[in-house]
Length: 235
Image (cartoon, rainbow, N blue to C red):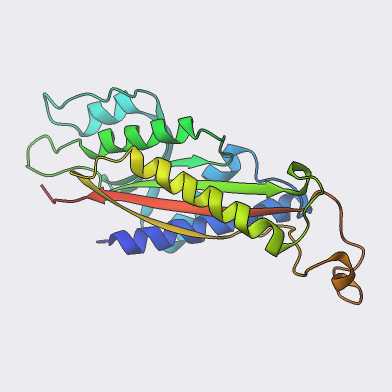
């Protein structure tokens, strides 16, 4: 099965949203932050398998094992050693390596390291043929803004949106800064997760609605940001 970059990007976006749905189902609390990272890994993997039948999934694969399995002799080794959260294959053929981040710090240092590692894995070439092994490097990340971060607290969509949108743009900028644009392209998709931020201008707006008396003081807005890194050239 041949997937395009857009196919895979949309699949990652569906998977990122599905994580928030499952998080609500498990916690029964719309204020609960998305956690732990293992939940993100498992739900993303399951969603991708639903979107792309025939896909097989591996978790926490070491970069050294991937190099040994997929690279040709003499291929430059990954400087950023470690493990990759998700590896996708069709049968024995590698398709994508994916990193997930359920919480991002202000510096996004961990995410930048992941972006560098993904590019190094994408550079692995076939042992016998002049082609790259992995088609895509994927990133699934989340940005959350909580009422408790602000004084006075924020509860509503219009209050959170500016700050959440700004953080998403910052994450995009940091990822792009770590990208080798000569060798790779990147595409992003962002969207709203299931969360507890309210629709309205002030608490009185909720009177007479299903959300009346539901201001908890721990409201949050969560957005996912997914990205797909792909080769600029096929060889």
